[in-house]
Image (cartoon, rainbow, N blue to C red):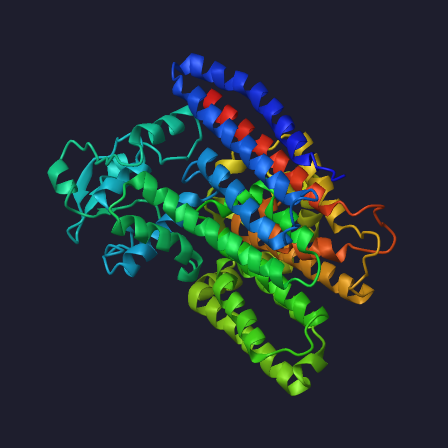
Length: 555
């Protein structure tokens, strides 16, 4: 007699129960704002989420009537499905620094299409029907710039706010009113007709980084522009391009990993990871690049018999593309030292390979961030932009090493909980303390990752103790580099701790760090990896529904 697996049913019922509870919150928000369409949207989201959880359950926990699918195939479906839900519930430009990443992608899109991308002052040029996303209250007045384009007048440019800057019920209302077809031009008191026929300078600066970080987003924006779609569709297609790139990169990394696929899967299912993957953020390039770098290094170290020139080219390409986004992740090139020299064919090929990778990273960093690196290395005094106070410089830290040690110690002591929470999923949106994952859900995700990393019955220990120690050293150095960079760039002298460090900075090396924790001391009695991953999917379903209810009540 065949036995059916009912895990999917329990998952659906659990998510549905929490979803019905939060329906009461949505109704309260709709009653207060008199926008009853919120309830209708939530019910659609509720039905879609429960159905998705059920479908994923059948893939994770098949019974005897269905074949067992490869883990990377299940991930591709889960990553795209859950990513789209996060994309919809947390609207465009709501992720950390997303407005600046959006401008970088828009700029690259214009270059792809052979259209003007920047004004003489360096500001990004956008279509007149797209500028409203940066001025949702329609308060800007416009004037002509020196090079003939239109720009927000200086006295009004600081007013209004962009879409998603603060997620509240009005954000959903704005998107609903605009729809997927409606066009919206600025209602400026002056030159309204001229605005319709002129590109407009955006006051928001793009992130200065490698253009490679915005290729997926720019392709989505370009397709929307070629099809003549409106701003809402343009924003969502840019985000969708980034999501598809991330899922594709992570899928390829899982395929290449010789072990630890479940760990990478679990990190990719964290709410913070899903939120970033469905945004314009260049963190997607960093995450996808570092995930694949880790997979290549582990594959060459433990599986492949020889290192080919193509493998070296892949590693060099990853470091050239993702490295300039954040200097700190250059430390992870140390993972290449896990690969035995004999697999290169001797010390000479090894040295040539190392030089090629280092040169690719170094030239890319010099070209993109050379001036910034020189300024940080040579300046003796600094001012922190956000506080307008004196900050730390490299020279100051070298002359006061005990003060630097004290800052690191106090930061780890007081900020460890914050780093943990923001790595899993607290402070989603623009570091919004209201849009967080409840502590109970954070505990579930954390326990799930630890269980996925633990050794299972009959599983062999592939990593030697020395290699595990080296990986931990690399990850610790990467974390140290993240804190040091923010100490110099973002921390005023008056602060008792290092400012600006967020838990999401640790996500790129979290999978390989968890893989290094596997040991012969802690061994689970049962291999339940797929059930654990399904639990994470169900928890994400709950988080998605709760986030919508929170935003809909925020009037």
